[in-house]
Length: 131
Image 1 (cartoon, helix red, strand yellow):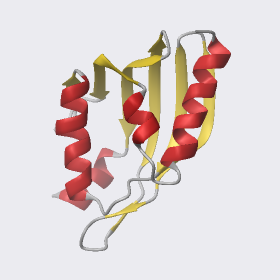
Image 2 (image 1 turned 60 degrees about the vertical axis):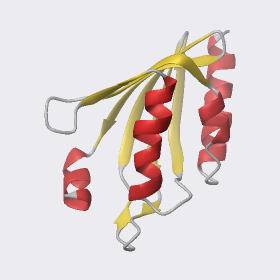
Image 3 (image 1 turned 90 degrees about the vertical axis):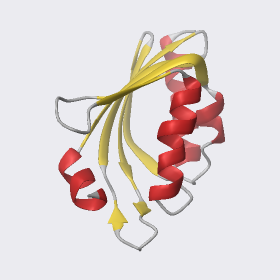
């Protein structure tokens, strides 16, 4: 796919995530998808394969945040097979505590599928919210 097509797919995914619809996002993931929480601290982690992303990462989101999960893109930049998304979450915990993390996702797409995401986030906010 072209850089423009990759960017358009990502824009579609985030337009739906902003509304709380994660289905286009999940459907765009390749079976061999890899999602990395970047860093060197306790939150750094890699999810290998779509099943791990869906079960381990997305499954945890569904129990630690009130549905639906929302993330709004503030900026989307495409370059070849890579699309970079600057986004902010609009979420709350089941106890009603706001969780509005700021993200930068570096997405690698090939043949119309998400193959990898390197996620940068405010890990201090994660710690304060969930520990």
